[in-house]
Amino acid sequence: MLIIASILFGLIFGSFIGSTVYRLAYNKSLLTPRSYCPHCHRTILWYYNIPFFSYIWLKAKTKCCNSSISIFYPFIEVSTVIIFSINIFLFQNIDLILMSFLSVILIIIFFTDYYYFLIHDVLVAIFLLFTIIALFYFQLNPFNVSFLSAVLCSLISMFIIWSIGRMHLFLRKTEGLGVGDVKLIGVISLWTGFAYLPILIIISSILAIFHILMTSKLFIQKEKFVAVKSPFGSYLSLTLLTLIYLSQW
Image 1 (tube, one colour):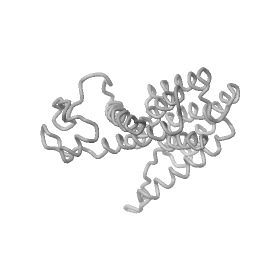
Image 2 (cartoon, helix red, strand yellow):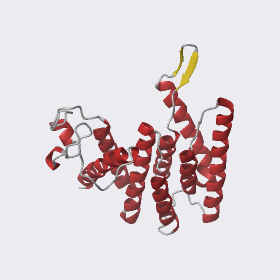
Image 3 (cartoon, helix red, strand yellow):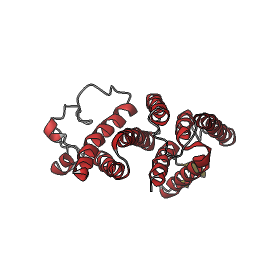
Image 4 (spheres, rainbow, N blue to C red):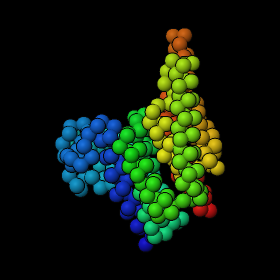
């Protein structure tokens, strides 16, 4: 039953996350209109909008205009199923509800930054409010961080990331770390505290560098170096979720 529940809720929330990522990226309302085809903008009928299964059934083509359906959507849905399954395995009762909500926030942040290099202020605000409630009211505190330590760590981590970003801008004349990254690490470090902040930054940085290397792309073109961007916020989110899971083993 737990496996069935994780699959069901993972697909439902995964579909919601996919829609939310798209709408946030293009500054559209999260509530209206109903789901629509991004190619011809017709409303998608509910039986063509069943998470994951519609993608398989329609063979990755839209029913309304026979355009390709991005693998982005089933990938998010399957990823959410996996994460919800881990949550059900590791947490119970109110902690399970809180971790599921946290997971949804982090997945949205991961994909909006990964695909669109966007960390929306609304998301950060929701994340901050949830963090305060989860950590200090419900005591979902995997790293046993005190209130004072959490606040100090948040301020210091924001200053560190902001300083690195300004240094990069001064030396390279391009923005390396955006304001969204600064705000995001300020919230994430409320969870980690000082003990896990270095681990968070090191792992996220390694993943961000690996992203650049794997996407190939410091390359020479017309005697100029063209650098590929790396979604640092995505890897901050992924690393936080991973560290929380590892703390439960």
